[in-house]
Length: 402
Image (cartoon, rainbow, N blue to C red; front, side, top):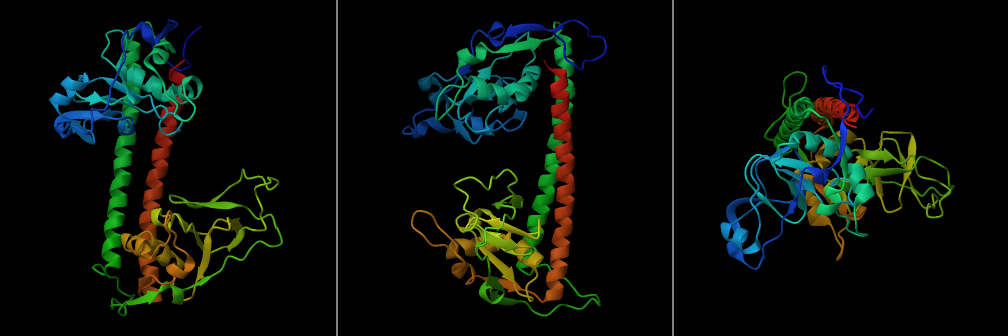
């Protein structure tokens, strides 16, 4: 029988197999008005693109166009409740399955496909169906080599199983909508914590917020010290070819062990890789401006690409304090000032060593690091809750759709 594994009580009929085109005779894309016509832009009509299909519902857009642009380019204003999906740029995993429903009338560019309101299929049901299946649809049915895309005809030819009773569609959509609302609120909680942490960091490193010692006394005055006096360049080559774990550095997660890397690959010359011992720092000199650095605390020794810069801190600089400061906007401003290169800018160790940082005494560094680490712990906990909610929703979608 064509039935999902998980259903609401009272529904027993098989679902019917249909084509998307059975419900939508016409699926509309949009276009981009001429940028040479300034009178087409900065109007009051929301004009959505695929990059803005990030949440279930969307009520505003980055760009707005005028009624004249609508008339001259034959664009259509879609009423609230329209479902949009991304149909271009689907070679990128983050774009596949991108979808949203508008809460205000809006038009779209050519990167989106619009599903109008329909009396036979609930668009919130279709939204969740696409979120479940969009990834595989993007892999299987897209056209193009470099830029992969879907066409209206391809989408209309997609198979879909739907309940015979529309009320079952409604119940499924309402249930999954509740999860989306929980996920949205959880993400807002995380965003607020991150904003609070950012505010504390700005106050701490600009010395507008100070700490006191165990006796309630002020700590000594801060100094401005060059990193060259506080760190030492390390990162010797793995000349013996020892098969240490290979690591990369993410701007979000820091050190990541690349468990899938094969030492036998011809392009992996591990003798040229650099050693990074525990509690040493490493960074990508071409990407440190976007936070591509990390403190190695995942294993005793790992190896990284020879392109990376590796260093250790001296006793007067606490590692966790430096790590926190390197996440601040003040450090990023200094990185931009000290990079060099024509096509791509780099921050080599010699330039890194010239950067001056605000340096409290070791005891205050520890206090600052402990405070910021406690905020990080709260954020990590909330992110784990978010991940759990997201996984729960995915599990339900797997069982509630065919």
